[in-house]
Image (cartoon, rainbow, N blue to C red; front, side, top):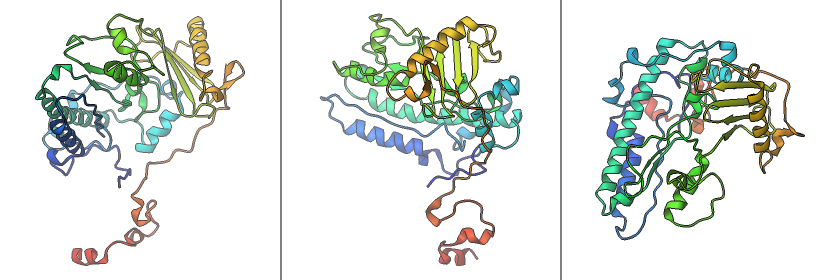
Length: 352
């Protein structure tokens, strides 16, 4: 029964040793399955880890690996421009009501790094189990995530926006028998491509969405010229669509029809909105966004041959208070003692 409270984005330390963490437990289960699997048959596994994720509470000794003073400086632009996407200040307020404190953000970042390193150790145990199998060089490993986190950049926290820190993350592939090691590529890849990676490796299967990444890596098909991303429900006021190329990123927000355009080559930190100075590029990428919405499931985002626009509005900012509801506690009670209703009185007596 997880809780998200006013402590959600405060850097913490896990009260549990590393060997009792959720990531370690998941690695244990994966190792068990790998060890007992039949060496003569192909196998498929999916291991999901919660971290890195708030509350950022890495266990000892990972919690003290990274000095906050050595963390990268925040990427902060003009706050009005950074917050053109109304969801960014809304989500910032949800986890930390005050303006971004750079010193606090560096502490949070250090704990984020620590959680990644803890996760890396857990993954290492899984890789050791794979390498102990016969023909381990013919095992395809695909490492990916679902999103990043602003971690204070652009005056915000969390996800659900199209700034690089939140939406771009690396995809790691290892297949010693087929792919060269240590190769860095910059092509645009989507989570929708994961199905095709698995089925191409396993054998012939119709590719229903995404692109064939393995064929692209072998030079058998062209790379993407652009990639489209969407957030929230098409046709809703919160809907956003992004079109990104190797040079440009265009973002459209249904809430007010606000737009951002960044030259990722010249402005990798996304601090200068070019939507008014590069109208031709804006028009081309807008047309691609419209085309992407002419597909089943996204057509409600359209108003004729244009993207649907809603009058701009701001949501009332609220703090995250998602309490464990098993005792009927929905938030902070007016009377503190009401939070104990239904709690085991025998336990209370022992405490007293």
